[in-house]
Length: 116
Length: 112
Image 1: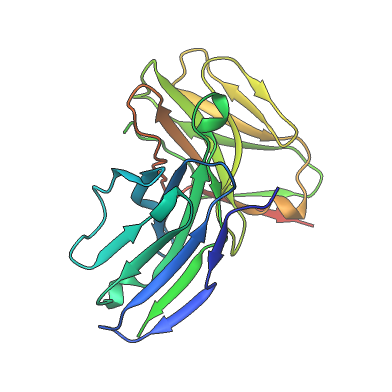
Image 2: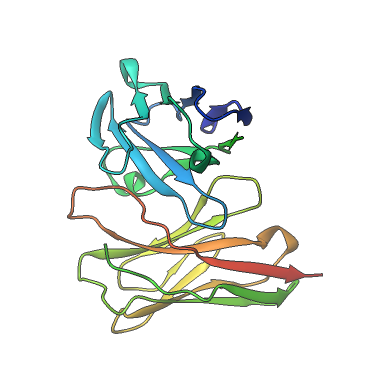
């Protein structure tokens, strides 16, 4: 079974530029999450989708971050414009809906963003 | 979200058992105890979860105190590949939110 795919693995941009990250969840997983992980800390949820609807975006800085999940499969996370404090690893995860298996989230390897 | 407390770091030797503690004194009756680990340069991966009874799977065992205020993740024979940050997370399955709230976790070093 293929895991959660993310691209790119690394991205370096200058502040005030824009950047986009892509995620392809495990096939059949209805729920998709984007987390931000700053160096030395645990991941923090930015946004959660159920199919193509947003379930929780309470911690997404909406003035500069946006995310979409068209057709309920792939998702993109965008930052525009980027700030220095956005330097972090952006992790995508997915999970099933229903049953005990829905309790397990599967993570991709992440995209490491450096803002200079 | 109920909080957990873990040691910042622990060390073990290869092929010896490792006991990773987690305190969660404010746990509620509907909180499940989840453990994830994060190997270097990778995303977190699920290890195990439980509610009240001790749990075993191919990766580890989870021992839950009778009052549920603490738990211990047990790796029976540590290998170099087990060197990672281990996160203990409480999830209230009745809250409607499936998000994971990560702390800083315990960084496990395994010595050869």
